[in-house]
Image 1 (cartoon, protein in one colour):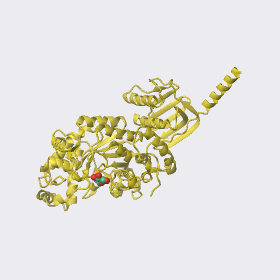
Image 2: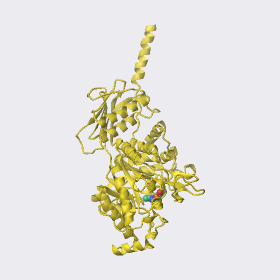
Image 3: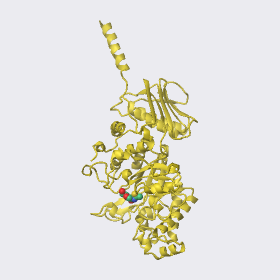
Image 4: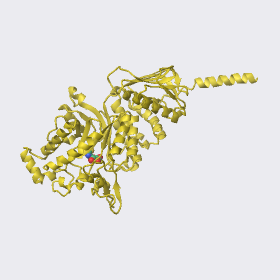
Length: 530
Ligand code: TNX
């Protein structure tokens, strides 16, 4: 009888193991080709991670080791020898897209192939999603699958404003983590604005001694208060800055996640913080405006010296010079600016602004960098080599692309993440507009108005997180998530693979991943539109 029971018990165990087919966790952004096949592979303590003995190979293997340890308590070994029962990271000469990857699960195990480690890294991000969240997947079992994937757009970015509120470097790294898990590849760092200067510049020490701090005033919102001050001033003082070492650390952290960092040094407007430290570069010489004097050669020299210190910190080719919302009235009342306009044959303030931007572009070009700026740089004439970031809708981007300039589409609607994603009375402080999840999902960076032979000028898209209202990392995460997930799919997945209803189902699962990673997110974003 005991023997019979034992047989029955073993039978039950076998059946239940066989039935242990895992759920299929959705991946965000949706891969462009994903074909499931019959059968499963289980990662066990005998599974080996196979990679080249290169720095990148070892780093990506290490990411997998810590993933399996943390999620399944499995301590996996590595090897450089190709073998079965392995997760293999393979570099192959095939293809021409450095971000593309293939992920195959067969009875031999998992293989992730890319032309570069950038692609392999994305394959690993997909694998991590196939094995999370815990609420859906409780054992490291993978369906046999063939995934062949590559992004639709090459610029998949987000901007973080660290001027209006300061975000310490560890918070910035956490933002970068969120970008990486969504296969986003550009981080635009808005380091400078009227409220605060955030980057150490050795030649102009006042910028961080005074420009990085401001007095906290009662009954004043931070964006209404432009008074720079010293850190040890009496009363409450708010601020912060990054040393050059901090900047290098963050740039390296991003590079390990295949994210390029674009620094923004705002000019000629939005510059109160700098100009309160160096008022000689304003038109009245007293620092009462937030605009550099375009008639003073000293302004150009000052900004060029700053750029000379910024350039070596950022390996990526782009440098953002802002250029938005320039309060040009200061120029119209300034003798030096009037003289400049006469000397240079400029008819109006727009042309003076264009002169300013073109002069800076020459310098930036001489430093082997490419200038990118907000779409106001179109006014009065765009420098020949400039790239435009279109924020006031799509129009500036359409105009620039049709004229043969590269463009990043970043229209306020729907890509400003400082706007609400639900009914305002239920949402935390925001700038006031309304960009809900599905509006972001529907974002298409290439409007029909762009001529067919100019479409390649649209590099991609970018969300902007302005932080007048956002003081903490958790609030920043809330504003990013899940809208960044929607944006990642709008930029990665080809339009014919996008599917709103499927996305909503996948995002529901994705929420559990956020929870497991301790990310704050807007669950409210799935509420019906209003
Ligand atoms: C406009 S977008 C700005 C920012 C503000 C933002 C608030 C842009 C280039 N300029 O300075 O923070 O609106 O949504």
